[in-house]
Length: 238
Ligand code: F6R
Image (cartoon, rainbow, N blue to C red; front, side):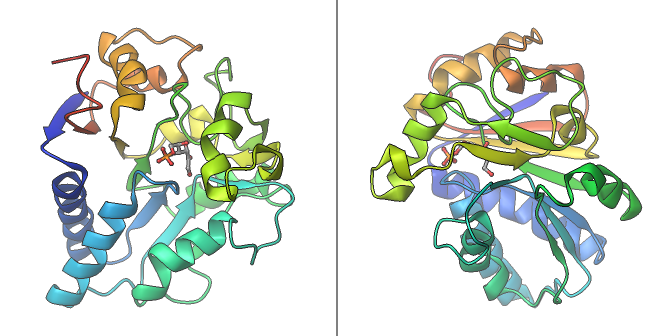
């Protein structure tokens, strides 16, 4: 596992976007695993800019998102489909049908859908303050596949900022890729920015796989995992 520390979230986003753009240039039919939330926004903005400057096409690219809330209509302003459309998909030339999100309907088939596309080339992750990746909350079994999960109270609290600060508006359940699903990606990049992620990053850096901090499953993979940090998220490991 490699840790890279950047001056700020913008320079982090640019570096990671360059890596995603290089993959798509080299493999136009790449399969991307994507995350929502605040962490990947600078990366998506930089990727759009690079793609436009360099004329990189996403026509053959397939995407699989990590998670989606249960109970929100697809076009809800806070659904992860809406987030992805707004932050990335609508600005690039993806084909219709290129995007996949886990749902209660397809969750039993989601891992096979990924396999049938040849597997995920790069999986982008954020990390929760409690160490979750996707919505795999603490104590999720390490061998989990795509499944319905109950969001931790702390996660609903953290995400209330997207719902006008009202924790009661945050759904209680989500469908998420499992930890085993995530670990199956050929390459994994995790983004953490801000002081509130420093504690979880320290546990990840300690290198001991511990279900109370789900991200530590990444330490089972010595190769192909890169952790992108800003200085604040890296503050306890420097
Ligand atoms: C989002 C996801 C979550 C977030 C995490 C951090 O698709 O899977 O694990 O990455 O909750 O969220 P932010 O980036 O908003 O701090």
